[in-house]
Image (cartoon, rainbow, N blue to C red):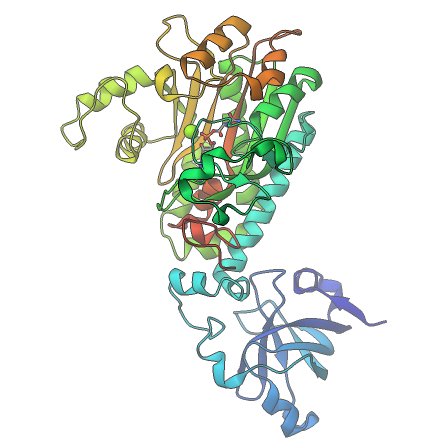
Length: 461
Ligand code: 4AD
Ligand code: MG
């Protein structure tokens, strides 16, 4: 019986040798009218198809070009070449569709080095490149690991809404969701829009975080997580900011900040150990582009994270002449500071107890009444990979803080209710999924690890 095979399955099955197989894929190149190098995306390794020239018409062979999709029927054998594990001696070649040969040279399908910026400009084709397909396989595996971890730890996966009326982070930059055509109004009049006539009957936005809704679930189900896209309309054009990014957010009842830290460290370790094991081929390929990749990943696995308070971090940074920007207690740490701390301790940092002023309203006020029970995890290269806290579970204090920050209570009545009906200490965090993929793959720009990046002035495809 002839069976359809993915290369990954074919190359790992010794008992298929000398069996007839059918494979599909796209041609990377066609050498000497004899070797077709194909790939179907299931693995980094290509499959070599042997073509006996005399068995096929000249017209057919002429049509086989870079980028074309083929179905090959043939006999599977072990390869004597070093570059591929296996080959198929073709008996039937079927072409799926033509390729625009005159234009192929202008695309990234040409098998040569292309700058990441060029790949980004052809985001619709870059899945076919070795680099991007490797990143995508790792990204996929990491998503699976997240669900796997939580599943086995007894967490419930909650789908929190994407459209929301609350601003969890107070980041300011939220994308508005409306059915009104705002272009019809002069800018100055936009504040007078009557949102009671809008689709939802009040102002709505794309969510910046699933946390607030996640908290309500955790305060009933115990331990939950969300994993979805979040949106920020900040004008941050950096190597680590996206306007649409994916976040993993666990939230756990009866957890204090130390439990929260332990969980975060355990998850990150788990992810790295699994990826190093399950994505060896792709990781080694990426290492060939970025020398120190494995050492950096191993650093996380081999070391416990360094836990220091914001105040201690400021003391360390103030004594460093190398630091350019002025430091004083109360500032938001800049990426220069984060980088210095990580390098200083040679391992990831968990930065605790930041000044209340710069942090979100839901973080638990510490006894000093100046700081909150926050935790930010800083990694080499990417900086903050996790932001979280113990939550303010005391109704009066939470309300107080919202009033101080001028947060209008009305949209949060349901959130405040959770503090009135059986409130308990609880904690959680948000793990920047894209930043973690960036770290694991060693890719410099966050735009190059997500299929279709959304950044300021960029959402074409
Ligand atoms: O620190 P953030 O803003 O925390 C929250 O949103 C909390 N509500 C999470 C929680 O406690 N449940 O974001 C969490 C993480 C950051 O540490 C960072 O890794 C990532 O999300 N992140 C971004 N990643 C890509 N592009 C952006 N614009 C990001 N903003 C935050
Ligand atoms: Mg943060």
